Image (cartoon, rainbow, N blue to C red; front, top):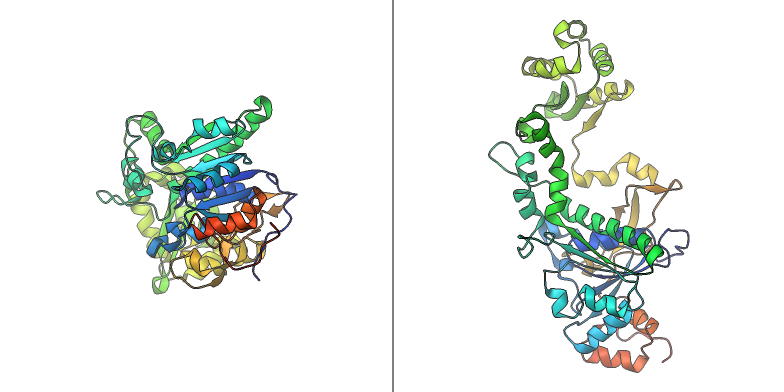
Length: 416
């Protein structure tokens, strides 16, 4: 079933208007969060659409994932008439967010000083590669800041820095932008005025690796990359077992160690004084882990998982992302929402009926709903222009001049 907009009065940001001039992942993640919380998020795109829609490879899912619960207004901001449309919209907005290179918004007259003069209550969220400082004019990508911010070093084997397998800084940077917007909106309740919020990829990445910085501060020893690290736990590893199956197993307390040994017939190890405490087991990992690998090698992964679950021990199958569509927990708890993706929302160019993960939280026990599928290019241009007071003839003139794009220029529109 194709989800459509529904009443959102029960959602915390119902009635809040967000104007989003963003692309790729970081800025759209901010709008995604506010939109899922009930805000009316209006995505501003060029008449040809956000280029993110057409990405292939690892970018093919970007637009489809980060642009639900939004309306699309396709308008040419290089044209004065297009900027006038946007300014009329900003005058009605609570939040404006962007993630373009430094100076781009000022060149269009859309920087914070300009828009706050028009709408003093506006909260302006700027997503950048770096906060103001020596690096601020560099071009940043998630991979760039992972490399320069220590995350790639920590993820890969020694000498082989490796970016994390998801756009972690882009996504978290957008969420921090939304968090800043929430703080600014709370402040506006007291002062009546908006303010500028800045979030940045590099500083987000530094926050992610701060635990390893503090590890060095308290131990005097640099943190080793994850594959070469000294684990905090005696058992915290991926095991390859019967028929090449793989499973992650963890034992992180003395009680769990006793339970694990009993469940797998390891009474000799349970009684070994060299393994009495977790720290003892960490010091013994060089000989302990090979022995456990040998002991478990002939068991199938499913049997190991069954015993770990029965005894309340931490474990995990090694799952590929596409397999999560069939995850029984996600399906049973409503963590995946059905969605229809129009052909212009991804590089494949064809309509897709699928499911999309919702935000990982509940309010009053309820997941936040998918109210709108990711929009087609200019899907809501017509209705938004009418909301701003444009008449049919004016809208048609803007369309014919190429200033705006409508999803269906020939459709009937309400009276003008």
